[in-house]
Amino acid sequence: MGNSVRSASRRTAQTAGSRRSREGSESFLTVTHPFHPLSGQRLRVLFERRYKASGLAFCCEGGPLGSVMLPADWTDRGQPAATRALGYEQLVELAALVRALATRRGE
Image (cartoon, rainbow, N blue to C red; front, top):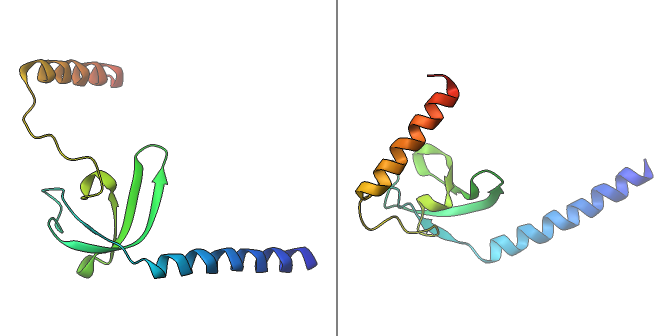
């Protein structure tokens, strides 16, 4: 029982410290994904999380939607979207990739 009390208090101190640093520097982002219902809106960031598969994402206050999790690339903090359409070569490569994936799945 003594170990669990020590562990709990240590954890509380870490949580309190990270909470204080977040509260001191409130941050916002803008949703840039053109088809997202909150596109163009500025949202307060609650926390951020890094996923192995998809990278950085932000949990934000979403107004009537509650809290929303947004990939960094859907915000002004992510990589900018391509400025031009895909060319013929890229479309041919994409079509080959889609065919290969469909064949793997047996479709």
